[in-house]
Length: 134
Image (cartoon, rainbow, N blue to C red):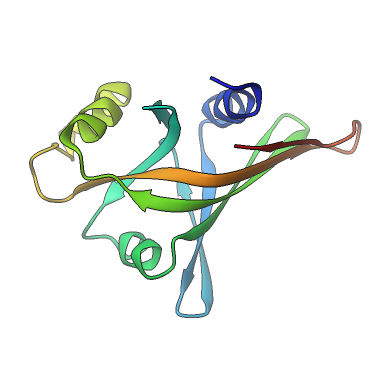
């Protein structure tokens, strides 16, 4: 895994909770998320098709993720592309077994998005920003 992608994944996993921003027909929507996973060389997030966030991403796949870890923060912009392959769903649920109480790869609701055209910036008030594109 390339350095920027690895650094971004490690930061978001260590933060635990991040905030996902979407566009709801011109109205920004921000909500807490906790799934970030590497599969097939890309970063992935997970949600349910029945949720508003799913419809928002399908209408406009441009998303932004932000999180804090200690005194550092990250901003990740990306294009979220649905991956409906069963192996992608299984991989995410295996990485987050606590989700198996709510989601199943064959339930018609579980959904994962591969993140493409990623640009992340990790910054703080005490060091120069780290910028990555992947």
